[in-house]
Image (cartoon, rainbow, N blue to C red; front, side, top):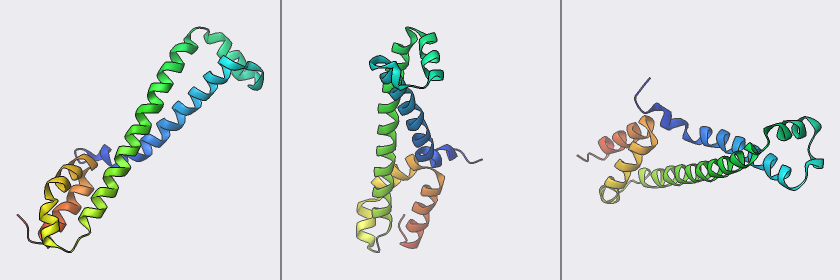
Length: 125
């Protein structure tokens, strides 16, 4: 496996973790306000964890914010990369080469390869 290959999976990982933290956050918030709307299995589970519900609330809120931020940043970087890489103008490419280099390193090996191919195509050093 190539080094940094996990970067290719930032979006799916963020989506899965966002769903998990959203589920935990929703369950704990419902517990704080009214247990009667939850199924009996969830009620017994939440009653058995007691004061740990507060820790779950804080951790799920932090996870929700973090993974939403990670998803938003990754999507924005991909959009910017796609905008900048699909230019036919050598001057525009050279002007944005530093940004493309940084973004391609953050997004992973396949984006780095696209950057290198475009660089060779436009004959930029």
